Image (cartoon, rainbow, N blue to C red):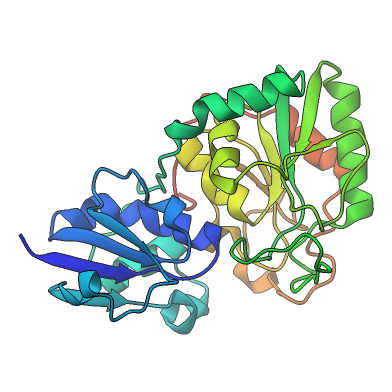
Length: 295
């Protein structure tokens, strides 16, 4: 059978999104992935081999491929704002897009580690939060100063702390686990999961009561972990990066998404009221099936 190598770049979230294509790509040829985040594709039964991008592209295993494919959605028609990220990947790789296509990563090998971590921290019921992001997991150093490269995507810390306080008041027997990196803003009444690898966070999400996050890796983990949550959107479009099983909040909450009202530089984008976040979290339908873009 032929062997195709796919170069998949970007952050954890973007690489996770690409995993939605794997089963379709396998129908064409054996699949080999060359990526900075091997955890997005490791143990996938439809992937023959995953190679980390620390290796040269001239590695003999890559050169043995019949084809090497690469695409960068951010430098394509995706920029017009009309396509979901997964749809853009499908277009570039000749795969028919369906809204039922969702990311799938395999982290079951971390189940016991996560269980031990929760036991060590005396945690039974928990909610995951992620209010900032944008740092590359590869080469991350907790001693480096956090540089907020996209302030209109992160949720404002003073609002985030209010959300945490309200969650603690509403769910008194539930621990709030903060999944942001150690050098990012922290919050009172939470426990940091910074000693867990991001693949372990994905596995931990499976057992959560729900999550509250921005457009970052947690958002892309949610369909794979089959978990519903509340996602706060700022300078990115939920119709391009989000999933319909989640409750997707934006400044114009209560209105149907209107592209003409979207302005990625509007400072109000990430100013969703904490009470709105909590009210929507309480209404989560935990049995709602996962789905890709808006219907």
